[in-house]
Image (cartoon, helix red, strand yellow):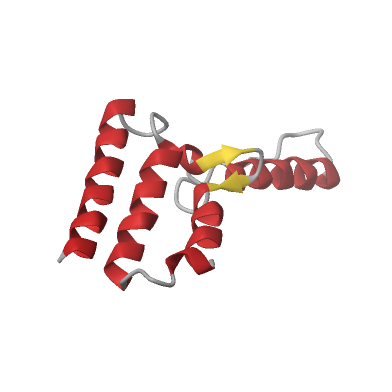
Length: 104
């Protein structure tokens, strides 16, 4: 919360408050977690959505699509949240799970 200081006009105070709100929205760990920002304003979920909505998933089961989404999630954020190798290992695990589903 921003406290209004003496000598500060209401307009100045409102402008500063609005700037801080915008900055907080950019850093929102729920709506826009930093580790999912791939580049500029593009988030991993936007890339994943394009792939999962494409024709590439037509021959996949819902479970395989789920695994593909998670594989992409961990690859796109690799090293941004957890240890790089841990994220790669998680991605590989989901890839193996999707491949095992296609075999059975």
